[in-house]
Image (cartoon, rainbow over all chains, first blue to last red; front, side, top):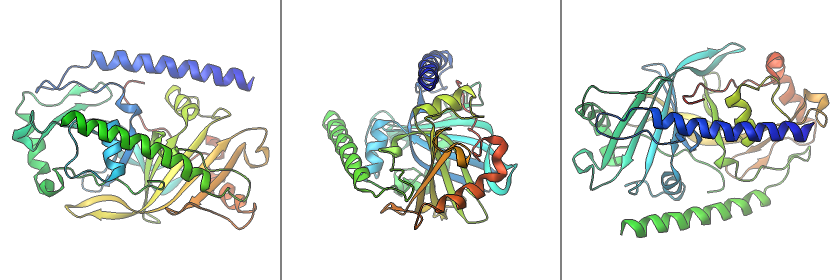
Length: 171
Length: 171
């Protein structure tokens, strides 16, 4: 029975993988042409944050290039090919532990794509965001990027990235 | 040059993988005999939280069985074979954005291992924690588990698990 359960869960995992692939292909690109990375939900963790100014919790994931860079400390600048994904939820209070702030409604997933040549006008980064569980692209035209880049200017000295990789054992 | 950089990072990633394997093997088991899961740092994200009572940020990761269960909503009870890993940092303030709470010093990694038969006396869960970047096992003897289990009793109706998987697109 235990083996059956594990097999069933493995089958479900494969099914979810395929579902996820098809879902990403159905999502519209951002107005600057960037497409949603496939299976970003499966990327590894680089950091997290809690913003008390807008009551959101965030987990920062990265593709393989980003994770290798983060764990080896090569993040200023991040290498070309890096994709950082920030998953954002409205925060809420844990029903059984009122001093714990936990993820509520999903707000959006936003990404930074490093390609120093392609995105030379915005610090070497392409920006994109998809809103809600429906993953609607953010911005009515390609000009939305000025908003992203403006917000990231205070961290120009950190390659325009707010995230500092969280300290982890075994690095 | 771009290709060289990517190759170098890929090589580093392989190196880190091996380093991580050897590091986990060097870590002492918990007093109840549970050993540190290898490469848990690479597991996928299930949730996050910010505890304002002890000023810590947490990211909850899961092994493949846990992630499949989380994404298919089979979490009460979680299936045998589930391992949930909670990575905990003291929180601090982002130097460039004072309203952002971000991970500071690594505190510990703590785990719940689901095996309904083996751990029948503690709700079907085995508990273990490793402290600090050095990953010292927590507890002076196997009795430490009563502390873990006691804390989780308020969430008995959620299979003794505080974490509710964060909402994600493409599920």
